[in-house]
Amino acid sequence: MSAVRLLVLGVMRLHQPTYGYAVRRELLSWRAETWTNVKPGSIYHALKQLTQEGKLSAFGTEGSTEGPGRTLFQLTEVGEAEFRRLMDEALVSVDMEELGAGIAFMDALPRAHVIEKLREQRRNAAAVRDDLLAMIPKFPGRYEPPHATDLLELWSGVFDNLSHWTGGVLERLEAGEYRMSD
Image (tube, rainbow, N blue to C red; front, side):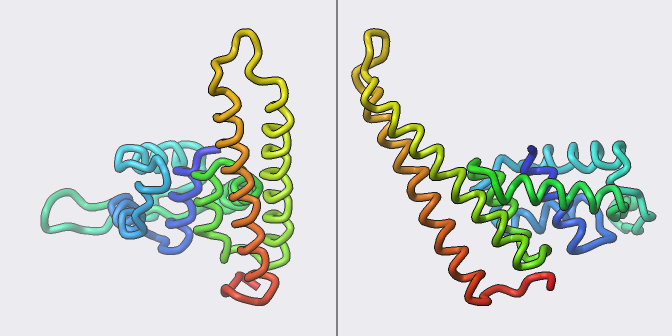
């Protein structure tokens, strides 16, 4: 899954109709480049790709005194379905960039749905942690570097922390914090 696609669709959904530079400016205001791989070129590439796939449509052109007019875009029904699909993938992901993009737009979904997905994500993170911990007794083997055990402990700690963090978000959601789509 591409976190950039989800971010572009999500911002479009919030501010449609809008143009590429406005999407870029919005994501920069969130400092998304610090927690994702989103770059100006990737935003414009995603806009072009999503338009070619029928997930965005050109809505018109906004005039400009400083150059050519800006093309306004809006989500199509197919784009809305893609947004929902990407959200479901992101909310269960153990990839920080994808999960971050999903958390950024979780308020677009019903509370119970987000809770269900984040419970699945917490199980996924715990499973990865447990798999990594189970590997430790086998390391270092004949061909592994002697510090392989340290790396497994590091990575298992990351996934343990992710599992705990998700638990905190779940507690807040279950307590009624955050405004959700329902």
